[in-house]
Length: 154
Image (cartoon, rainbow, N blue to C red):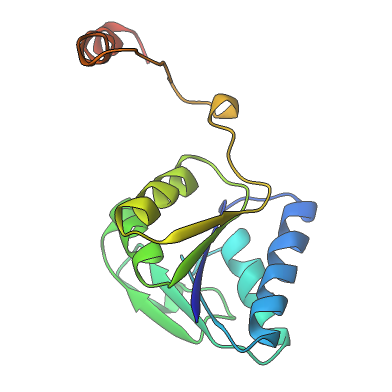
């Protein structure tokens, strides 16, 4: 199985330890780790996988494979910036979502679009995100709220 592990690029020591443990567990079971290939959760999950002899794939936002963390075996440069978030869940059979921000949330969304199962471990409660988030009850209210959001200062 190829497991896409998603989470924040900046993490606490506790979050890094959790990601590293996920990487170890995946590799110990013979699974390949797919991630965004950079720092934070991505570096920790790769470090954990490599400590158990596992294989890691990094789907990078930039154009340079050399920008991957040291524990990525197969760096894949995309040149897509944040748009590469669609490719991380696409390249796994399942997604494991750890703590992160809006980038992680976008990857959770793409997992749904790509019909991938998502297993959450210490991940999103949307109300806790620092984003402009509002709910609506009807399509009309949704459009009105979207229009109103453009008038608010950012």
